[in-house]
Image (tube, rainbow, N blue to C red; front, side, top):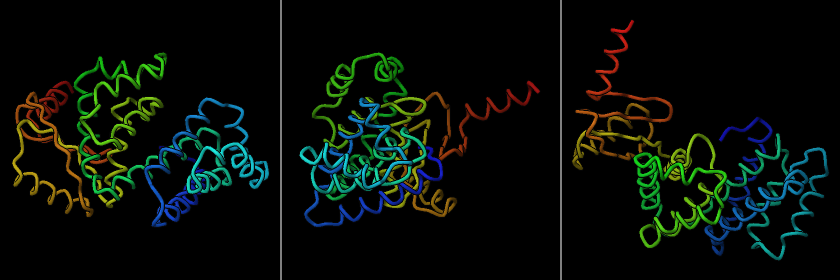
Length: 273
C-alpha cells in the first residue's frame, strides 16, 4: 500500500485509535474488522459518500457526524469509533482513505486471530493459497477478473476453501478477491501474509526450494536470515523441482537466487553480453 504523507499521518492516527479500541477487554477484534470492511464495501460503491468523507477542505466534525448519522445503527460502537478517527483525518485522496480503512479492517481481523491463538495458522493458510494461485494461472485469472460478478467470485472462493481453512482466512481471501490491489490476487494475499507476520514483528522470507526442507534445515535457514536482516524471520517454503537444486529466497524486494536454474540463467545473460 502506497500512501502520500498526509494519508500516512491520518492512517497512523487511526491505527492508534484501533489499538485503543482493541485493547478494551470486551472488544471483539474480528467483529470490528468485519464492520470496517463492510464500510469499505459501501465506500467502494458510493462514490459521492466516498468523496464527502475524504474531503479535507470540509469540517472534520461534520464528516464524523455524517458517518455517525448514516451508520450508527449498522456498526458496533468500537468500529464506529475507529471509522470516525479515519474520516476525521486529512487524506491525500479518496482512494487512499479507502485503502487505509481496508488496512485497518485487515489488521483487526488478524488481531482477532492472534487473540484466538490461530494467527500462525492463518498466516500459513494465506501463504499456501497464494502459492496455489501462482501454480494455477486460470484460477488467478478467474479471481482477478474485474468484469466478473462479485458474488460469483465470492462463491468460487467459498467452494475452494469452505471447511478447509480458518474462518479468518476465508474472510481475508474474499476481501482481496473482491477488491484486488496491485499485480494479482496472489500478490494481495502475500501482502496479508506480511501483515500477519508483522503482528509479531517478523519479516517474511518466501523460500522456493528444489526439495522438501527438513525441520533442521528450516531452522538453520531461518536463523541465518534472521542474522542477515537483524530481525526475526517468518519462513514460508514452497517446493519447485524445476529449480534443479538449491533455493531462491525473497525478502521484501530482495531476491537471493542460489538455485541451479538461477545460475544457468545468470550465465546465459552473461554470455549474451
